[in-house]
Image 1: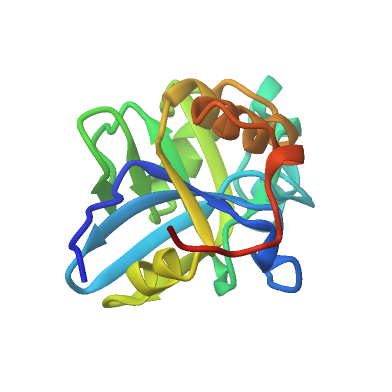
Image 2: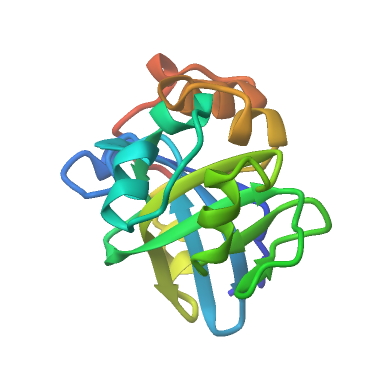
Length: 186
């Protein structure tokens, strides 16, 4: 099987995943290597806002526009853990540098800094993540479960969550109405 590195790529769920937790999702891949892959679903907001999350964590927050931002469903793994995608990478206690511009942080210090308007310029907060074992994502790609496209910061951070999936498809030059449930191989 061909080796690919999908770090800093979007995974677009194909219509064949209609009965899956990943139905109509756009997932940002933060890390992909020989051990597997880790990603965050970036287009599925929850009812939880950043302000309510701060309150649950006993973090005092100044009056910030970001407080109304919805917390995302990041994936079905570790739903009780928070994950913060952010730009710039910065220097936080527990950060995976996706690349030179984007980091994924799981430590509370980034949320405290954000609450005090001292956090990264751009953030997405999610509960849970999406994970794949070694070779699993490659197998799913071979089964036509996903489309992939290199990620862009504007789709990731500058669009409302409901616009991200169609924007990622447009990066490939397609519209979701053009996707078929039929699977085929040339």
